[in-house]
Image 1 (cartoon, one colour):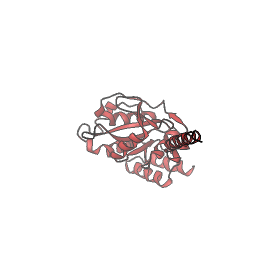
Image 2: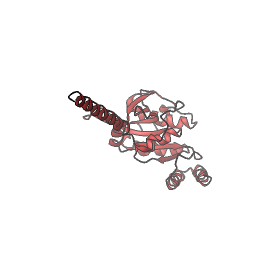
Image 3: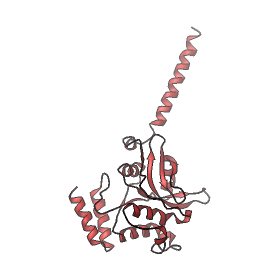
Image 4: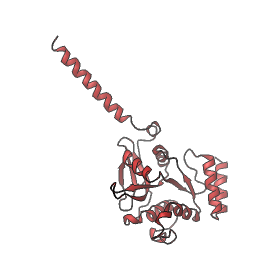
Length: 224
């Protein structure tokens, strides 16, 4: 009898460990669990530059993915850089519309971003980088993820395959305001498209002087 109890206790401890590991593995949101295990959009271009040039590089990647012949250096002047860093979020979207693209904002949930990546669409994001005493906003392109390892893959300014854990990315992304957008051709509807959000984005495109592109965006939704 004396020997049975330690064995029983050991079995309980082993069971607790297994349950604990299962709990950790199951910490990913159900929406993410339903996505493919691993996605990497290898076709998304990478433009190496200095860290402070992250915004032109990220936008150049997104536009190049849509077939626009562009380099980050050609975007500095229309983005009013250097000097207009505080207006970058607005200027990035406005410049994308000048190229006839629909700027489609995403919800502030990691699952919303990964759903688009799983559908083949890279996501332009802003996140903070650096220490708590000197954190700076950076722009990058979310171009992949690994669900089991719980990592995202970014096209950063200096790294073609910058890896961050889900938790680290979510924290730095939300610290920077949870900015995440698709830059789509007018006939390229996002995954699980929100009809009103797409129409609003098309209206913004029309207000930017791209009426024909906006009309194509509306027709794409009508045929969906």
